[in-house]
Length: 195
Image (tube, rainbow, N blue to C red; front, side):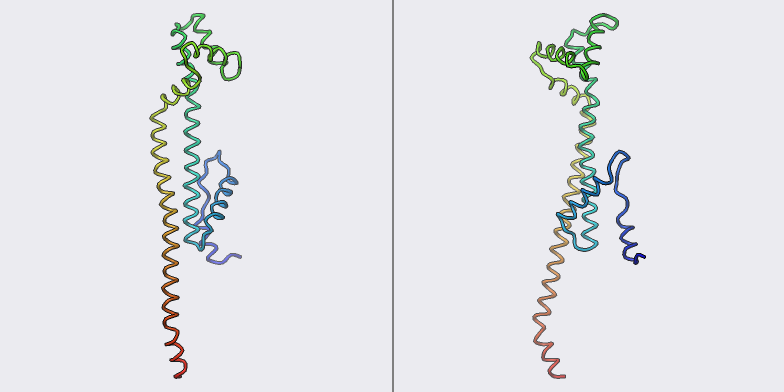
């Protein structure tokens, strides 16, 4: 049977903020690593660490998202780059069919990849030209993610500062109380002797 403080704690620490594709075990490992590193003392510091775990998790998610957005845009960027460098062949021509086949096969066939690299080299380019086109095509999405990341990182840093402030304030309270007790000690002894 759990006591009332365990029930209150369960309410404070709800399910982790996971997407259906994310691992609860990985989130738990992150949370455990943060708990081990920060060593929270008491429920308030544990709440701060839970906030940090959620923020760090979301930061990692958005960083993965940025990479995925560029990777998704890669095929269209490859298609546009090869199409332009091949002289923009008309649809339904043998040249266009060749371009389409090379673009389609680029992801799975080394021969097609070599053909694209050869075409890029003719214009003193390499695969980074395709990456640049992919990034350019999703730049506004990446900009939004960067703003979200900056906000999350700012919030994470604020929570870390809050833990430090909380600990400093608590340490100051302990010092003040202990100082008052030490300074009052002779008075307490005199009162006890008089009794």
